[in-house]
Amino acid sequence: MFAEDQRRMEDFCHRLGGILCDFSKQGIDRAALAALLDLAQAAGTEEAVSQLLDGAIVNRSENRAALHPVMRAAHAGRVAVLGAREAVALAAVDEQMRALVQRLRDRTSAPLDTVVNIGIGGSDYGPRLLADALGDGVLNSRFLSTPDEHAWTELVATLDPLRTGFVLVSKSFTTPETLLNAHRARAWLRQSMGADAASERLWAVTAAPDVARGFGISKGHVLAMADGVGGRYSVWSSAGLSAAIAMGWDAFQALRAGAAQVDDHVRSTPLAQNIPVLMALLDFWHRVLCACPVRVAAVYDVRLRHLPGYLQQLEMESNGKGVSVDGQRAVPHSGAALLGGLGPDCQHSFFQALHQGSSAFPVDFIGVASSGDGDTASRHGLLANMLAQSAALMQGHQSSRPQQACPGNRSSSTFLLAALTPTTLGQLLALYEHKVYVLAHLLDINPFDQFGVELGKRLAAEIEPMLAGTGSAPAPDPSSARLIAEIRKADSR
Ligand code: F6P
Image (cartoon, rainbow, N blue to C red):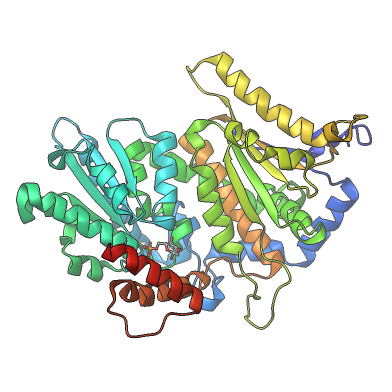
């Protein structure tokens, strides 16, 4: 690729704030890229981006805007989209958050040393990623998503109820996994300090404040979440409370500002230099033109270990759909499935298939150039591996022994953060969010609903009584009936 195009590096590599985005190892030439850019232009990508950022109804199946960019906008930007009244209400929630974060982090007066985030999906991945990546250790952050009793038991074995608080995050406040864990947390606190003191250690973040109040959360402990913010896009909103507690309010604001910088970039940068647009076009190229159903995200910094899970929800819950935005036709391509993990671990598991498997899967490599005062040699070891993997995928290896040959010409992008800071992580997450949106636009998919997850939830609610022997409805199918019988048999042993 580089031999054929000497200036490739200059034109396929872009910098945004603290992130270098290198697309030069993508197996696409200038002519193909130009054609893709024409396609983006013809599809009205610029207008679609403006619609999102202006608060137009982009979530058509649910007839609402997608307000996550507003959550990180400055007050004037919020007023422009929401109007003064709503913007002031949002500022009030921010102030409630800021005061709480400050109070809990003031270790001279606050009694808590640990805050547990209870939530699942978008109410877990974002705060978990940020607290792990950017938490400063003033308070311990713990996360509970699964309803599995083992997870609960394991968690509380390490906690002192007198020094623990819980943030219950659920946009709907109806998610069974979260409610079960919320009940456990409340009972556990009550047991050691009584109901009144227990309620002082429970906070709720939700778009259904009345339901949270009905659960018993006191009024001042409920933080409102806007209805127009989707769960997987919600970390910028009050749903990011546990992250803000872990990293401090100023850092949380810096995260938002980093993302807002990307909002400005995607709105005002010509398509050919517009990084999320280029990311989306590369995904489109692999998915639609190369029929590649899988892509990979490998991170080379342990502080980003939760990023692949976060991106999986972001990408696949958004674009894992087979129907057009107007609901009138089947679309031939949903977004690709995303496989990912910590780079060194991935190298020793599925990377073999990337180098020699019969299908080529594009990879996003994500690394951090400087880790502050860490050990330089070990960082170099990590980053050398990251660079080696992308080089190996591209150049391949010729050998007289077929078992040892690697075909090469396998595409990757590299995102190199100058350092891991709230600003650069905010930028990175917003790049992916906008990539997902632009790709959805090109695929004619609504990235903001998630009706597909409802069927399984409904069936689980029907099957649970069957397992308890109280259900009157028949099992959904013979396989389920057999498995239910087996589980009931185990219960009676
Ligand atoms: O998995 C479906 C989903 O609705 C996600 O979109 C959401 O992030 C998650 O469940 C949790 O929902 P809630 O915040 O309402 O508890």
